[in-house]
Length: 458
Image (tube, rainbow, N blue to C red; front, side, top):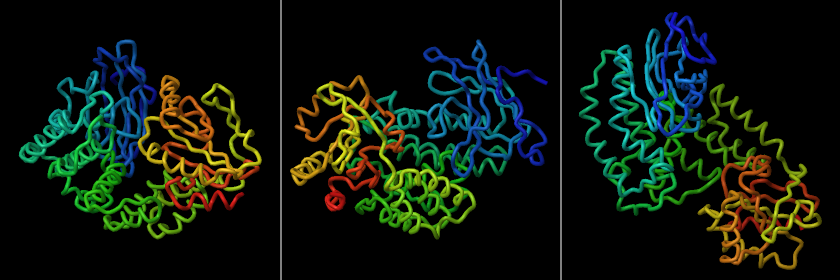
């Protein structure tokens, strides 16, 4: 048997009844700028990547895997995470396949002569689509804007169907999957581009015609189209957002927003998947129970029920009446301020950052709220999650915007964000006079619901 290099999982016993022959993967790093990193092997499970093995490269940058595949289909090899495609590369694997590749500074190339006809076709598509993927997915490295992205997208759109017609491997399952996956790749790259940070943004009239035809039902008529694609659930959510924006309807959060999105999804199981995906924005247990009660008819599969139970269990630890996190941060004058300093007052905490657009939108409403609450036992505490390097920028913004309340600096995504499971900002939290949780997902100052909530606990 061939020897592999620094393999943490040399043999994964999958569904052996399906796979009587193992898959072997030979790889090496061919990078000039980056050092070799731990390589991961992912399977695709219900539209989400799952790590099934890792390989630590040896001193020469070589790595490898040998495993029995659970299914014939898409797998990923790369150094990225389960969150997105950055630094992860998809391949079609079946029993007995050999895969050889080099990972370069920004992509991969197949090597050797034993790669399957399926993966040769995959590599050809990867090479063709790479200029679009590079500008869309690797946005922090390319700094691309719509000015250079849209021409690349239009060029790929004009080329891919004629090219696809020539890609016949004889493996009917793969040929059908390649046709579907190329269309999903295009949708993902196109929509992801618009939803990632850019220095310039197009007007609606400047969008290519392709965007107006994006439809969740056309791309995902059934669960298999979502579940077999490595970024299936993420793509479903981004496509739905684009479709809603195309319609011109006002976007709404919470239950109302999800019910609106349901109108664009014909499959009930996918409605459940979408609803569960939107629970990441809910941090208050009471609100979660209200939300899940509204979408419960669409929580159908065993995996959906298990996911719902997991979310429920995690949120239940931050329920109203629980003691608040005892933080201690520096204010704009260098004085240390703790949560305990606000006992005897109803506390509104605003987690924000100078780079956060939605946070800036709330500033005028926050100022108005301060005027409304003047003379009342309410403390408004703004906690910045800016990194240490941006501390002076934070101080300047406090001065320029004449920000009031108590301004604290948390030096990045510190313990308070971890404790309250804050992954997106702005987030507002309310505590009673004893420092106990009222809600860890309060209405924003722009909402008419916030003032009555604060007054209730006075």
